[in-house]
Length: 217
Ligand code: C5P
Image (cartoon, rainbow, N blue to C red; front, side, top):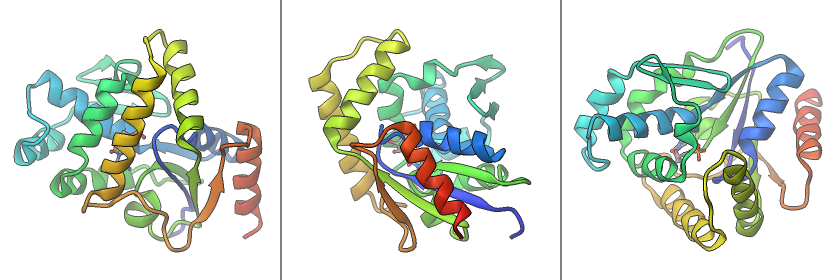
């Protein structure tokens, strides 16, 4: 493939979304926030009353999803839902529907369509392992669960949601376990991924490292 991809995978609130957006801006690349796609599907399932365990109905829903989804903006049925999809309840529901292999398969083409010149930065759980196995650079971002809960807390408060540290820690652990232990595209570093622990790194330091790795190839 001619168009380079940088994949940034990792657990919830590891900072991958922020780092991916900044790396994309720095290189002038497109951005795919694949978690937002799962969150849009989760929001749609709530609106259209499709249960998170009804895999077949979810596939039909996903195939018919009317979304516009571009760098930081997400629309469902023509209405901006960029903030709605950030709620913790939607993240948890996204994680519940993401366990179904047919649902994941139904989202593959939409994700690959983001690969356009001059390049793409894609963040998620399986960008390096499943969606873009031929990526030029694969990064796996980690951070301690405490560091991630703190970041998520600040993020939620900033967006005007209420948040509680104990609930966040419990939610993160549950979501980690579900994303890591599921049979379909479990969260794990690709064999050729570079590991980056951001617990003690600033955002700028993490971005610098990724750009440096990309440039050094
Ligand atoms: O990254 P974010 O928290 O927005 O993702 C929400 C949920 O969507 C994750 O917990 C995960 O279960 C699912 N997801 C996934 N594969 C991706 C991106 C997100 O399964 N590539």
